[in-house]
Image (tube, rainbow, N blue to C red):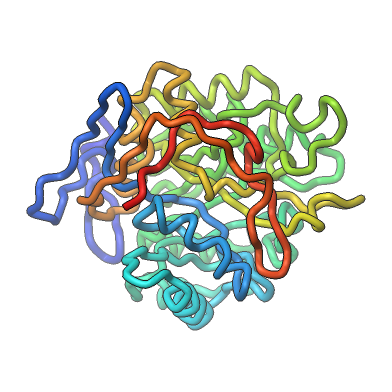
Length: 379
């Protein structure tokens, strides 16, 4: 059983996922369900884009309402590439928090071909950086500083392996000859699989997986390999992007895939694999930047993330497994204590707004103007 093996985290040996020893002496909450309510331990979002400035101030409250912590993506302009950058960004997030909030941003560094071993050692030594993010150059929003050849950062990956610092991977290749619907499959074959062999102790999270092949690769992988899944890839297939005209608010990277891929992701998320967990990849863009001739990639789901995941799990007959996916597995993989407080969803049909404020602009959330069956209970 891979769960019996230890791994290095910040210089300490911790168990693999599923055997994390909780440091809190408080009894941990158990998921409870009645006909009209669903209460679970407060979840964490293990993949979140908060942006900066007025955009940050606009979207942060949506995540704070639902989540205790979030892994914060570093693809700002300029990107978060040093510990000093991460510290400054973290301070801006904390300053923007609503009064009384104890939300904790879990910071990451943006991996570039200029990242040094010293950068990694400094990151591993501080208490607020929890991972390093790999973007293939040009793969998604603000990925121009990304890695062009993974071999060029092998010394850095070696340092991450030694420090127990996880590598978060946007799992796509960007070669012009590779079909955009095949980018993830080719990435696993040509980049991730060899990388896992080369660095036998490196902890890896394959972010926002979209294919049945990725689901199989993660489920059959070692305990040091995990994955996040977004609400859109659990709810939608590529018809939602292309049928009835181009639907720009369903455009994200990686793009939506065939129905059989969506079904495989639902099976993985609602199944027994302890290394797959919630990561919204909520990525806000102003409406005018989505509804134009060259619209930005990214879907904003943070406004109703937990309600959307609940809808998926209920449709799969697996509401009793939502807490494991949303509140337990991610914390376990990152070696964090599970959250002791709870959130409650109420079975109450309600309609999402068509738009939300976003600085001087507006944004269109996932499932805008449609009806949801679950609603987060607020104090």
